[in-house]
Image (tube, rainbow, N blue to C red):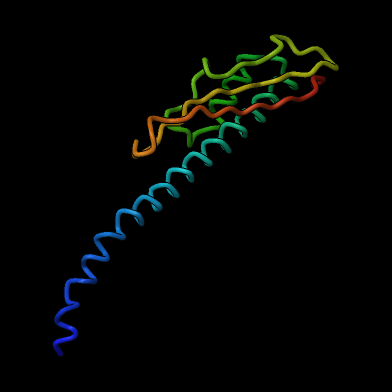
Length: 126
């Protein structure tokens, strides 16, 4: 019995040493998951916007489509983050939509945020 009494607090000490590392790993997984979701959302929004531009030849409609196609982004996508080139889409030319979005981390533990970029191109001809 005396052998176990000398080890009574060892588990608590080991747990106290291990829990910060485990929580850091868990927070990293959660933050990277959110960042990956933002990257997927930005790329999807760029694809939807360039499709709208190629078919409708309307840059304002393309921007509106991009903002509607990314409801899970926080903070929300703004028109200033969306670049549509060229301004008019003639048949046979290539339209390109680029979205630059600042992804903010939820916990702030890994910094303020990171810039995420999504680009899509499609031939005009709608």
